[in-house]
Image 1: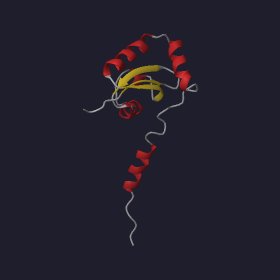
Image 2: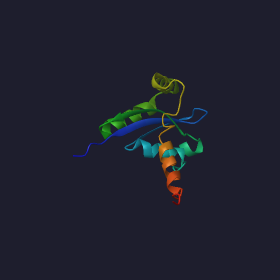
Image 3: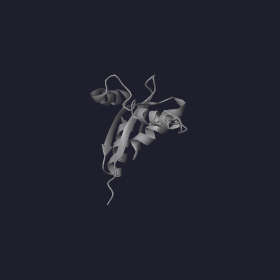
Image 4: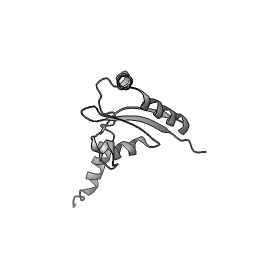
Length: 113
């Protein structure tokens, strides 16, 4: 049986507007947010920085945690982020650099001998 991983995450804008979501593919989902591929709150408020996430084995636990966090007040969410990321750095800042570099390299024609 295939093992599943699910994530609850918070992304923020530069002005620290927060969005809480869940996904089964964190890298893909954050890429979508960073490139404004999803209409709605994150696109409107330019939420492009992954500031916090947790992983879970089961989808039910993931949904429960997402709902719990969405009920929390702002101060409690900020406290949670500060536990692991006090400066609100983008935890996904370097996730895509390698892929961008590789795609550029593929466009360069080989040197003639």
